[in-house]
Image (cartoon, rainbow, N blue to C red; front, side, top):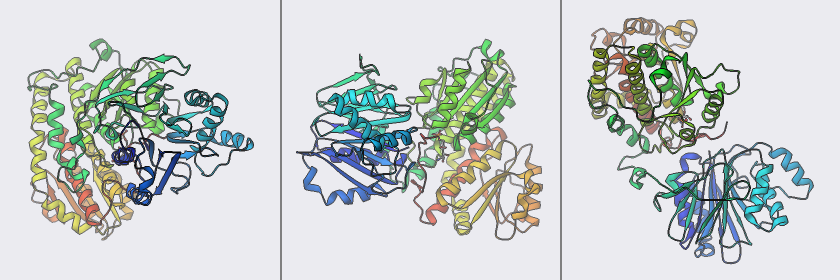
Length: 614
Ligand code: AGP
């Protein structure tokens, strides 16, 4: 969480910083700040709330920084200390000569703060970050070399960080470093950019260097000097970023979320390109390095993920167990990392993450890797920390997802699981060729089916209007769509703040049914297949308790009209792929309700897109 951006070059720095921060708003948005090198000294400006508040604050000081060509900026998602101006970054040392911005968490900040306070440092904020400003300033006083000071300070810091540092003595020098948090350097003509993520710099350059842990880069307009933790110079590995700036536009949609929902048919088509050509041909996953021998020796698969990615993982379990005959466990990364889990070289560990940065999942992956497991990563960011840990990779090709609520990345993750399961089934010969060909035919038809849903949203919008005033909302399903119920509920609560819950419908009578009355909407995800009749009976039970019944269904069954007050119909589809078709109306329902309630759809309160703290 939190986004940092830095620039040193010959252009006016403020616009570059503000624009960069705007692109990083998905990482947090409770306060922001910038520090720029003005003619005689560094000046710091901060504001609480959205970036616009900082822009307004800066209007009052326009004359001060117009000529500045170096600076750092930060957008915050509070971890230590409330979102206040004092807690907003950049933070300064006691005399104000040194400023820093930080993304991550300093774990030993209490000890450091105590020690530095005893030495006379004056702390002004409640943040963990401020200790770094004081510590680097202390080291600078000893070394008179900013890079050396950062290197020495880093030895005493425990935790995760990406840091940008400026000092009044170094009028054209930015020093940056990182450990367990992302940081990259963009390379321009006599200018360098530093950022937590690509969107902050992609307008300016496609040439970049991803810093590895403990590397330190000294950036001046003319050059970048990269060194390791011992101060040894390293040749930077320059990459060309596979990104287009146009990906960051709303393309006429009111919100990124709506645009991203509408992109889903193309996301499915894109992920199929190069992987599935025809139903009678084998699936090609070039970056999956699992051999036949490897699959034969596998005892089980563990899938670890968080949030929406966890729901995709739950569907992945269902699909893999159905077609590959391998036992699969799914676990929230945050639970996996704090127990003695049984993971070894006979376990395939699959990490699922849109961002590829989520701290809990990254830690879990590293733990499993240390125990000898083959690590397969399903991610939307092949340039991410998780992808760099992977033995095998399934890139999901969803394109950048800006809205905090994940939509198209979820669809792409499901597609990755379908392809992976069919691929493994082919290698293991655990399903017949004919069955696999039928499934592939269905898979290729999915984009048109989702287009049909997107072309006719009347019944979804009607439901949104009717139920937007509800305080609670229940989603029920069974079998492969139970995770769809969880995901539908997550979408609704994330962006509308309605208390929504997903249940396996068979569990209703074991407790939740006590909550049902005439005020409670219950949405049944009734897709044709083995649990259809069972779910129908569970829906009857809910109706008998006067709940307001809504069906999301691909059935034309006439008896649904008596049972349900509202019906959202979707095209017919094989039960195995029904989660892909069922989730789209639920994303739209959440979107329309939030829109109707006037909520901040793309940046819901308290959330951040990339959760880089445990
Ligand atoms: C989804 O809408 C969320 N905002 C959130 O649950 C997200 O899926 C979760 O934080 C995991 O992120 P990742 O996929 O980037 O690892």
